[in-house]
Image 1 (spheres, rainbow, N blue to C red):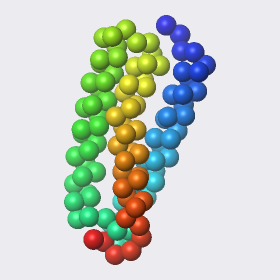
Image 2 (tube, one colour):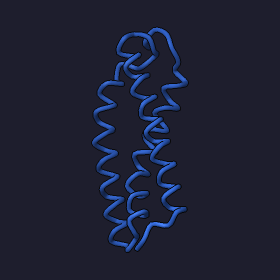
Image 3 (cartoon, rainbow, N blue to C red):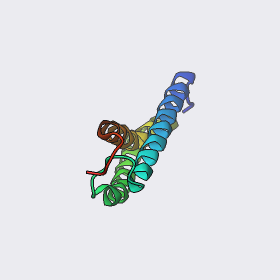
Amino acid sequence: MFVTPTQAVKLSMHTGLMLAEAQMVIAMRLWGMAGLWNVTPEENSRMVQEKTEAMTQSAMAAGRAMLSGKGAAGVAMAALKPVRMRTRSNMKRLTQRGPGTPA
C-alpha cells in the first residue's frame, strides 16, 4: 500500500508536534533539575519509567496495526499515538507548574 499525501501530511504534523512537545518537556525538566521550574521530587524517576511504558505501548500498537493489515502510514500513526499522548500530557502538566522553587 502506498502512503497518500493526506496520510503523509497528517503523520508529519503529528510527528512535528510530538518533537516540539518533547523539546519543551526536556527544557522544563532540565530547568526543574536546576531549581528554576516547579517539578515534583518524583519527576526524574517518572521520566525514566514513562519512556519504557510509552515504547512498549508504541510497539504493541504498531504490531496490532500490522496484524490488522494497516499500511505503512497506519502503522506509523499507531506507533506514534502513545508517544504523542505522553509528550502532550507532560507538556500540559509541566507548563501548569510554572517557574519557581521546586515543590
